[in-house]
Image 1: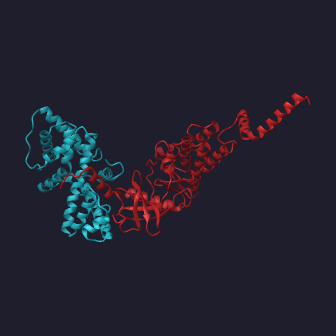
Image 2 (image 1 turned 120 degrees about the vertical axis):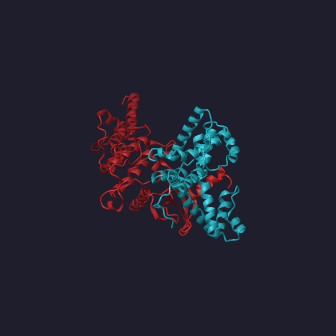
Image 3 (image 1 turned 90 degrees about the vertical axis):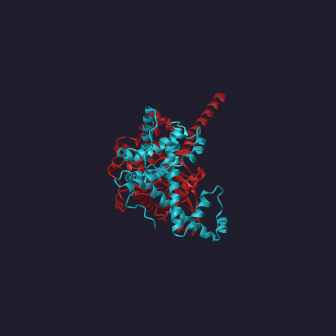
Amino acid sequence: MVRAFPPTRHSAVAAVRSADTAQRAKGLAILSAVYWRPVYTYLRLRWRKPHEEAADLAQEFFTQVVQKDVFARFDPSRARLRTFLRTCIDGLVANHDKAASRQKRGGGSPHLDFDGAREEIEGLEGGCHSPEVQFEKEWARGVFGIALRRLEQECASTGRSQNYALLQRYDLDDERPTYAELAQRFGVPVTDVTNRLFRVRRELRRIVLEVLRELTASEEEFREEARALLGDGAV
Amino acid sequence: MTRLDDRALERLRAAVREPDLSETKYRLAGVAGSGGMGTVYIVEDTELRRRAALKVLDVPDAGTEARLRREAQVLARLEHPGIAPVHDMGALPDGRVFYTMKWVQGERLDARLSRPVPLAERLRLFLRIADAVAFAHAQGVLHRDLKPENVMVGAFGEVLVMDWGLAKVVGDGADLVPRTAESAVLGTAGFMSPEQAAGESAGVDARSDVYSLGVMLQWMAAGEGVPALRAVWRKAMAAPREERYPDVGALAADVTRFLDGAAVSAYPETFLHRALRMAKRHRVALGIVAAYLAGRALILLFTGR
């Protein structure tokens, strides 16, 4: 059975403030992997920044997270991390516009693929979602994206790649196949398909919650984020 | 990996939210509804070959888990036609606590009363709710969250009081379930008693449910109350507890008297009110007497005898 309440917390928020360089890099890698799209999207939609400028500002934002110890001001009892991040972005944009000059990127910032996001975001402009709602949606996409990558790696390293492939066919493909079709395609009985899908989804749930724990600083914040992602009324 | 599109994202969300029923006798059949802490799913019991409702937490923590367990334990104590019986309780393979109960087919009270329903029928529904709550009180259980959204009405007018997640057990058995914090504010604004709103958990008793039932009665009567009925819900909703009905039975008795056209204890009548009520209550007999007297008068007029 999966443990519902793991006692240890390896928070990426705490890691980026660590004195240890490796820890800082690891924390920043997780945060940027989940948040770069939300940050970029928010800059495009809320601040109407063109692609180049939004990409530069987003890079700069993640550089500042470490260099300026942005999370020193973060208090999880007062605001959710995403709300805090949006406030920080607003501040960054205000300073940036005030100086009217682009600051140079610092070293050590993660390489982020903004070009791939450009078309998608431009397709969203003028859409029905507010920048804040889109920020939340991109955040959810980021969390699931990381969780899926980890799940794929775990399945591969334990010889269960077929389980991941089943999930991919059933939950990610455009056309959802029936269990019988999956059974035929993978050459296993239908009962095997249902059991494997249950198992791999259980693993995905565990990893998603694990990622959320890494992205939050307290149990209370974790529960709020988990409800925002999985609970009723999630964006 | 390519970017997840909106449909894939929603599927994944559902996939990790849905209960893991792989090592249970249940099969998922649909979603019944979601609440503050969890979701109720419709499941197929493959052994008994019947449908059931399965309640599970979306994101468990020690507090909400205790609340869910408490709700199941409370329901298990209450065997009454107006309260959905619990079938089973346990933990899913993914670690989440769940319980199953009777699958109630019907609609919520607020939905039922969104269509025109005669006052007498609404009051009869109210009496069925009050009956279930009075039974729970007799078993030492206070509901503490009575509101239209927590009542289901079946196709034949049967009533089930749902959502006992905030219930408090008093007297024998109180030690079976964890207590809530003494200062916790529990209930729903607009329906909770003043003592609940003030967070006086220790001071909550049967009269707190009487208050909530008073709010429900007012809501169910939808402003159609004649003075006597208004007096009933006002008495039930009195701010000082000692001015309310002492128990749900006394409130129900007054509503029953009102339905029967009798005097209610909450409303001291003037002679005129009493005469009008008596006239209304005995209008058939009075009509016959009036017709007889009118006939006699006509005979007298035309025959002189």
